[in-house]
Image 1 (cartoon, rainbow, N blue to C red):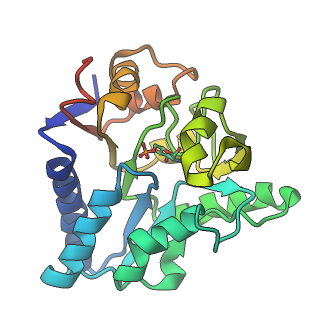
Image 2 (tube, rainbow, N blue to C red; image 1 turned 180 degrees about the horizontal axis):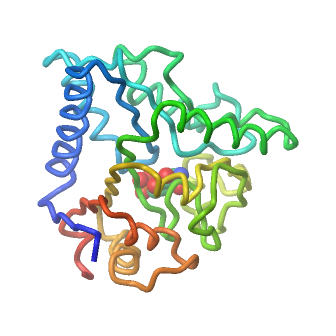
Length: 249
Ligand code: GLP
């Protein structure tokens, strides 16, 4: 068993611990004159981590000048300025409030033409590699067991590509889009293979709703049916879960 599960009292405590690890890594890299390459996630799970990082930037001189970020995914099609875009989410919840350089922000582009996506995926992967790989990837988890938008059927070696969203995922996103009919049917996502290449991975899950999928992910057989189970094969992954999300373990 490679996966280490850390059960915390609540999402605030867990988020602060995750933010502390990120800040320590940024500072450690800074001291060595190195860039810190972070893989970032959207959704409600990481929001409090970003709040804590913003606080540390404002009150504790945590600088993002040497941070390079790669986001996991973006809906397709999606304009940057739409309120549901992950581009918008990341700027609202983190980037607009810290000193990151805009050139160091990488988010899959939801405005590409279909026939540009294969090259986009190759370039995204190449750029991650050129930066020395992801030092730390943070993740939430969808009820289908997706990480990023790697829905059931995604293989261990999958890379950045376009995928079709699962019906359950679209149901869960419906409130953000004022109805399921407005939820995009596709997304561009890093692959399971891209994620597994990160040197360190932290997956966060809060609340009762995540308890069944956390049980399957941590204890279930590794298979494409629950793509998050592939994390069991990664040597440096921690699941930070609150009491509720851990209640079926
Ligand atoms: C979306 C994102 C995932 C995220 C999941 C869970 O599908 N693409 O990266 O993990 O939602 O969202 P939440 O954190 O809001 O539960």
